[in-house]
Length: 244
Image (cartoon, rainbow, N blue to C red; front, side, top):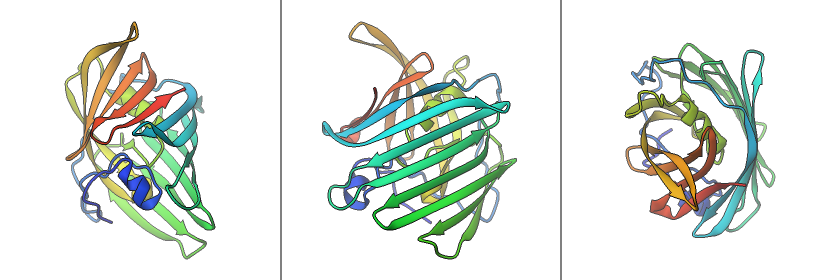
């Protein structure tokens, strides 16, 4: 599956999904060199909350999420609603199991839009992602993607808590530009992003750390209060995802 660009907001109007990124596709049949930072001193932060998604000041969706410790690792659960310009809403659920170092173990997602339903389960094994997909009760099919590092950032459509996990994977002690392999499960698309710490910013008397995330053709900014992801900004499409 190929896509030419990562689209936020315009994708919502066209296909009823709010997707931040669509990275440059890479072949799925051969291993590809997508390196993650090797330092393992980072740790995932437990947090729970809700995001509201706006484009041009208009609410277009919301997400409830919970990231908690589980069995020596981490479990991130979320449910999101995307409001379509026309037609029924899209409801999304996801569950992501992570090792203590942030490497994914298992991921499941489902989407329901009216009578249409799709879902997938993904197992990760030392950099190999095996995806089992089923759409509208049809025959399941399987696809694999290969990475040369076990720490892969999951950045799925409309599920913004996953950027809080990416912020935890970033090595703040080293800072600088760091490259992460990425998988967007709903799009079945692998790729890479670069993450870089920016100077802190003061907003209404409060100071936020900032991370800039770049794909080949889009940039977003994360605003963090410690480990708490407070806001995501995508200036090019006037979109903001704000923590309640």
